[in-house]
Amino acid sequence: MSETSSFAGCSIVSCATLRNELEQLVRSGCLDADKILYVPPGLHEWPDKFEQQVPRRLRAANEISNRVIVVYGSRCFVDTVNPQRTTDALIGEQGMNATRIDAANCVDMLASKEEREQMSGGQNVLWLTPGWIRHWDFIFKDWDIGKYNEMFPRYDKAVVLDALGYLDEVATESPERVLEISDRTHLPIESCAISLERLSRLLAAQVAAVAR
Image 1 (cartoon, rainbow, N blue to C red):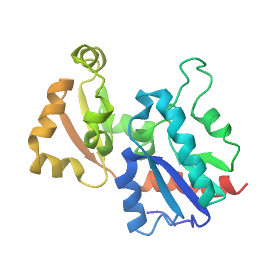
Image 2 (cartoon, one colour):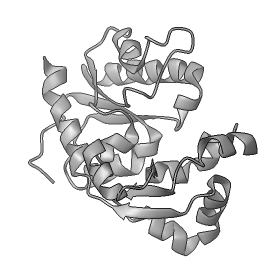
Image 3 (cartoon, helix red, strand yellow):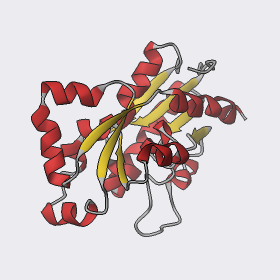
Image 4 (cartoon, one colour):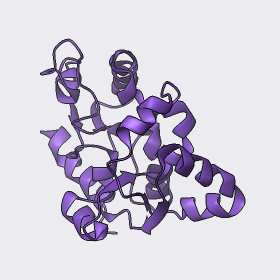
C-alpha cells in the first residue's frame, strides 16, 4: 500500500458491494475513518431507492463527522426523469461537506480503465467485484431470462477483480454458486488477483478534497 493518510474527522458512505474491501483496508491500518456507513447493494438498479437511502446515510454520516467521503461512482445514479441529475448532483443537494471518490463505478475503483484493458487481452470482459457475486441474487432479483439474454451475450467472459481471494473460496466451498451465475449469464467466470492500492489511493485523494 502507498503511504497512508489519516481519515480522522471523516466518515464514509459506501455501497455494500465494497464492504469487504473497505474492511480489509481498516484491518491493514490504511483506513481510520470515524465510521463507515453502508447502503444496500445494487441500488443503481432502483434509482428511487438510491435517491431515498443514500441521502439518509449521508445525513447520518454528517451527524458523526463534519466531512464525508462517498464511495459511489459517477454512473451509479441517474434520475430517470432528469438524466442530468446524477450521483454528484444528488450529493450536492444535501448541502454538506461531502465529496465523491473519483471513479465511474465500483469496478473502476479497483482497477483503472487502462489496467482493465491490459488485463482483458483484447477480449470483451464483463468486469465484476466480489460484492457482485456475493449479492447477485439481490441485485438481479428483478431480471428474467429475457433480460439476461439481452445484456450478457455481448461479453466473452466475466472476470472478478479479487483482492481477497473471494472467488476461489466460493469456488471451493460452494462451486454450484459460481456455476449458477455462469449458467444465467452464459459466461465463464474467472478471477483476477489485484491489490487494493488503487482504492486506497482514491480514498486518500478525498481527504484533502473534503477539507477544502
